[in-house]
Amino acid sequence: MKIDVVSIFPEYLAGLQLSLIGKAVDQGLLDLTVHDLRDFTFDRHNTVDDSPYGGGAGMVMKAEPWALALENILDEPKAAGAGTPQKSILIVPSPAGPVFNQRIAEELSEAEHLVFACGRYEGIDQRVIDWSAEHFDLRPMSIGDYVLNGGEVASMVMIEAVSRLVPGVIGNPESLTEESHEDGLLEYPIYTKPASWRGRDVPDILLSGNHGAIARWRRDRRLELTAEVRPDLLAELQDLDKHDRAVVE
Ligand code: SAM
Image 1 (tube, helix red, strand yellow):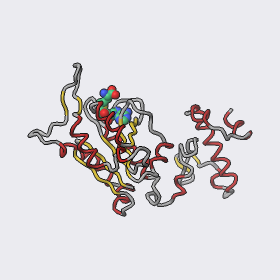
Image 2 (cartoon, protein in one colour; image 1 turned 30 degrees about the vertical axis):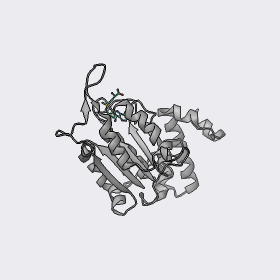
Image 3 (tube, helix red, strand yellow; image 1 turned 90 degrees about the vertical axis):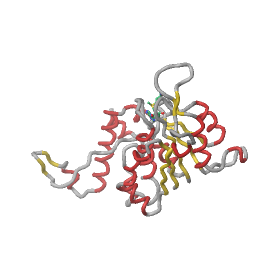
Image 4 (tube, helix red, strand yellow; image 1 turned 90 degrees about the horizontal axis):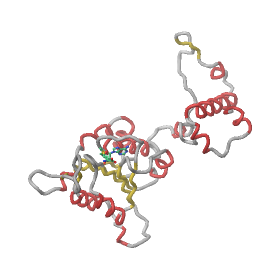
């Protein structure tokens, strides 16, 4: 998968060089490039922002540097032919976008090319968003109902959630299958050695070696936890059997 990020603070994205994502880049599983938006400006001060029309607080990111950057990085503008499948998906982090979740991460993990456009200040001139919607496969995306200072952290959140689903990035693919949000339930509680710690014991069932009973215990805990902290997730699940329903009621 190819990932491009455009930001006025490229160094913010340095964290992606670490750990599993960094390793995946080294192994060639991910092709990650971070671009400086200021490289697409031509004035002496490399200006990327200006005051808002209509007045109001803060600054707005100017349209032209963004258009030049995106034209340079995204291939196959829609103008090439209506209905032509697009290789690139343009993600614009915004608190005003639909909320990113595991389903969207799964969908994006199958894309060939993701481009993240990190806004700063009050955000990007609306005409860039409207123009991008005409030319590219545009997805405004929020990571939650709160406001950050810029799109860099939001992009890193999405890049990490998407990349770990790309085949080969996580060494053991089985570790992805029972995770929180994978099937709509939260994860069961997990434990490691020692079996007894500060007077707290690991549940006996996990030491029993009875794999069927352990699987049932784990599913029951997932159901209980989800019912307790995220009843909204449980309400969306269609495939609860009689036993599951008894656990959550
Ligand atoms: N004026 C904007 C508004 O009220 O919707 C907020 C701008 S915010 C200070 C600057 C940038 O941070 C945004 O353009 C976006 O890139 C990013 N950002 C802030 N909160 C975000 C969130 N919850 N999800 C994704 N990106 C966010």
